[in-house]
Length: 492
Image (cartoon, rainbow, N blue to C red):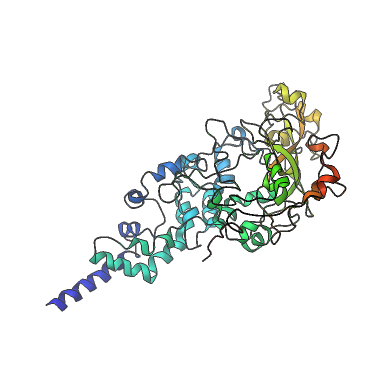
């Protein structure tokens, strides 16, 4: 009798198991193999997290925010064009919610490495919004629903009240990896900052943190990191991501001397005194790679003068520019500060010359088009192209100032100016050590004395090097109070 019941239970369990991967949505959802949020399943442990994610700065993107790099004008091009061009980088929700694309947790959390970013991007670009997130997870879901571990867990759940979630949760819904951040969404930083993270092996060669296996979230951490995260990832107060003071999350990431990183490090009293005004990255990012990198080429200049972006690249390795910064607040261009401004430090930047047409309606821009950090009012590229009256592919000042967009007989941009502005994009990665990177960290003689590579006049010292040869001969050491080096990240 007992053996008969056992056989019956086993047969029934196997039949119940098969439902989990053959289209039974309740069971598939329950075991987290579909890769989509469910309040009944995900929300039990991650209570309130979906709303927190939906309110995060990654999701709540302002479609109307203008950038000289994209020169996208929402008013003339429309929301649909924005979604087609930029939707593939967006995690869903926010501005994509009205298109039916909800927050896709698995863009970051899919644990098997099978998330198909290209399939999702194609769905969004083609307007098939409803199936975009599912397209990204199709292969990963199929694998998760059919492997042996999950089949055994389905069976166990028939016999016991609760699934053995811990056995497979992280394999399906893992911690975000560096590759999911860098090689997909933030691959767009390659042209701006010459970051090497477009390929994992290439990045390990160029960044000491990558070589040690440090994950993005270890520095860009969140509050309540483990299970109730607010998903407001820590970020530096960099000059090209300005926020309004009441809503920013700048300076929320871990610093170099954080207790979890390099707490207590010393380079000796002379060098340590520099940290009051010198960011660590100034010495630890001495060079940046040029030419064709995984993810693109580093930009040196770009121009929208003729209605299409024309780029000039750094073809060879290059030295970043040092400049004073305390970050930016408000809606301004990527810019830097001056030596005597408050709370500034020297940090490295990729300085890019950007050129575009402005309507000249902002008095500050009209007076100083090439030095003002005001956003101004860019002329939409659709109008720039249309202003080419003789069709020679070159837009002149006369053509732009005389262009009549609405056909009312009056020029729409009589005060148009062609701006050429030096834009500063702060560099925080490609960190070198004595063992890793494309060059060794800068030493005293690299900044002071006859071998100095620093442009002292450019950073507010017209009289030249304030330290001179006496500073050039100083030495730099590395020591910790209790340990020889920071605790290394454990690798699998």
